[in-house]
Image 1: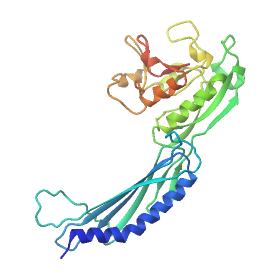
Image 2: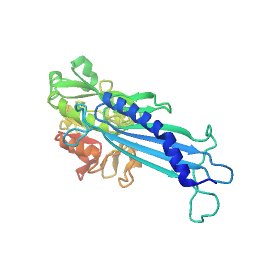
Image 3: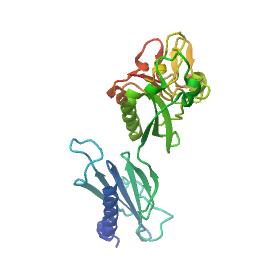
Image 4: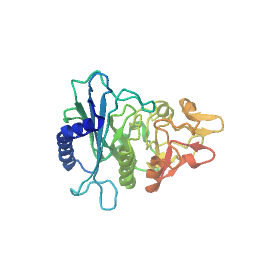
Length: 322
């Protein structure tokens, strides 16, 4: 007779070796990857004899590498804490009106087929892992480059009379996460004395996997309306404030507009870009949207930036300035 408790013990014993193998692979991976949290799942589906429900088993393993202060960072190799839970459910098909459906699979390769999956939560690197435990499609670590800029490089975004010289600006290359969920490289021109803060902020946005649509500099055309219309994140552009004559903070390289479409500029009935009207309801969050107290505003505030979303008129949800 099929005994669910004996079946549970049999599956535990049979797949203990698989669990150890995956654990060893994860530990080996962890030794090479700084500042990550890994969650490993092993799913087991076992076919029961005719007349009985199939058995379903799952194992979860969570491993975290942290710094001494509890924050995920690039530390020395540290002691790893393991937590594992093994749950096996197996029930007879004969009558238990309170029991729910049991898991079964038509794609099982035979009694006791097993699949392993690993997900690395944002740290320095994220990888998906195939059922054989082989890492594929690496999510690259955050990177940043800093170089001087010239008048020629700034193009139309710079003109005679601008309040800062090109020598006071820097071109910063940054890794960001696109709306398609993949890593991309972008560029911002910012004030030289803000470079470290800018890099730290965007490193945190990358760690949070906050999506950014586009990040290109303004040397071609320097058209702020056109940049907003295509949802481009930008910083330096020597221009007046919107609707005024005074220099914008962007003219000093100390302001950033982030995802303008999802975070429009609002003054009375004016909404810029026009596509931003779809995102005026801030109680209805969407990817790329910036909200009070969220990881984006928190990251910028930690480095001395004020958010235009806290203004009253205009309200500039896309805008951060030092």
